[in-house]
Image (cartoon, rainbow, N blue to C red; front, side, top):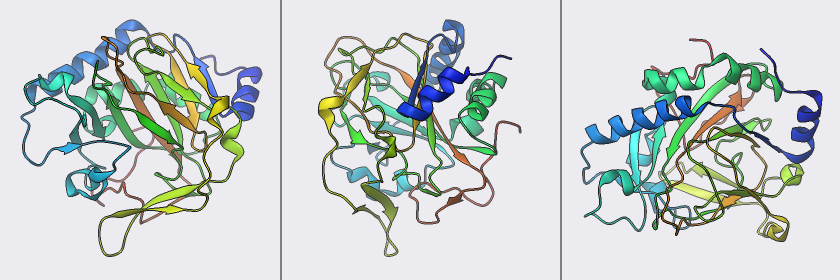
Length: 277
């Protein structure tokens, strides 16, 4: 199996982001979309369901969210309409499909994914978190500028995101934007559990990212984008008529210390696994 070229590895090291078109075939993407459609069709919404918003963060205090690290749970858009079908009201589903659902497990545990993890520096990769992101038309919310390391903190920093376009991602429907090269900055904040319960955002540096340098990542279906855990990225609200389905897998290094007060935790009965199970 052919891995990344030396040029691609240098590009990722320099920019903190790497775009790999046609990493997945349309059929592979559709297998994930079809499986998620089945999961959503079988789902019955309840009062415990949570609205997910990166601008408000109210969900972060709710047990439904804080206990989702080893489950499959459903999170709705802030502006969702109860009269709309569930599949056009959801923000995302997470956070352990890759270990709990065989279709998702097969998708992430393909040999080419394990090879890619090695090529971007992992020695003992652990598959920490998976999210199916809907970005529905008209109501898909903004994801504010952030980096992933503050939310999935390891010492030393090790998290990387494998973001897969399951549909074409355009500026109009809310594609990713990023600030290449700024993964060398120190983290500006850290999201953690409080001893007394709930969560808090610790602020280390309240200056804003230099977003005038942002570039769009308009990509076609099947593209995989590797995102360093300290690379600032953002996506706008989706005000278009088309959805922007995507899948994200977050990976950490097995030798790194994953802190006990990270918001995402698993029960002892379901420890993290790698690509081999």
